[in-house]
Length: 112
View: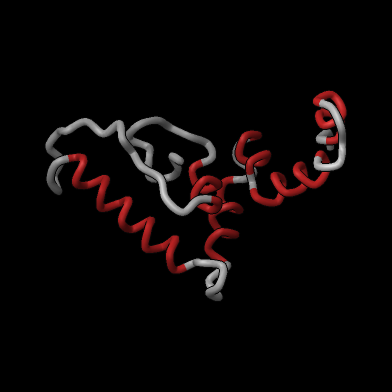
């Protein structure tokens, strides 16, 4: 997945939403240019390490459940994509369509 730390590759209105839902993502589109801190791939690998450590700390078995909620709340009302992809919306849509047969029926079940 590409999320909040993939802004070098492309902009996204759902970066924090992606971060709340995944364990790891990469930024494979970083050009090998010199930055103040070092080469760009090294700098983005450091950002990726920070995200990995944060995601490990908020494992569901641990009491740090506030982090995904904060990541979601920071982005979910900034774009329609983020609102639709938020964990609450995704689960609500999945529950609405799980027992409906056919593509049309599932589409209708997703309406607000």
